[in-house]
Length: 308
Ligand SMILES: [Fe+2]
Figure 1 (tube, rainbow, N blue to C red):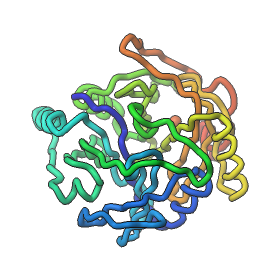
Figure 2: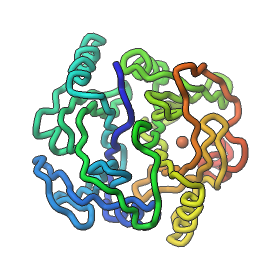
Figure 3: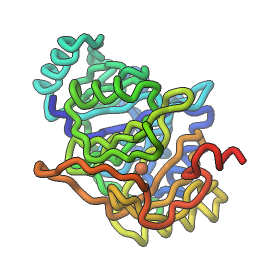
């Protein structure tokens, strides 16, 4: 299977409007001009809101990259994984079924509701909803309300880190069935490791860590084209008193310079710059330490220390 990238992310949130404010004022994302409504019809939107209360945000020339759906509880709603075309999507569906995974065809209405040409739905071993899709709609120029610019294109929208109840089952699914390749693993404690997986030249589009509790998304990362844009986002976060959960720092494995903050729906958001890319000649590494410098704060402390 040839997944080309992490194409979009859907979140559930009790307060999508707070996300709209955070996404535009702090992160510099652009409210979507056109929002697919629940029946798939495109609604003109001046402020990123659809009639069902969903907020959609742009990072580039795609119709949207991040959707925040109103819900009774915060959490990850779905991940959109992109394939090259509808033929590749059909082949992916057959491979998933051959491997024993229940696949449902989204149908024209479900595809239109995501602004894509074709869609398949499957759950990963932890029950996270994945949407494999092809033919995303584009509506043109991205203009950040804060002067930011994001690294997307063939590298996808950024990365997501999942917390898994069964890392071995997750790895079997993402590596052996979906065709991700492992870039690194980070052994942070004896017998416990996080695994960083790529599906394009971005060092990782997805990572899987063992979860001591419920599965779900730990954080997502958006990458900016300039270090100054990251610094300005940090300034805006501090201005709006957004909780900074890890200070500016540089990861050893993907070499991103980044900081982390708590989004209005709880998921941590990493804003980075300067991530390394990987090629076909990449060999797996193992790290026993996460950072070259920085990334201090409650998010990065070991659980025992955080509880003190
Ligand atoms: Fe990250």
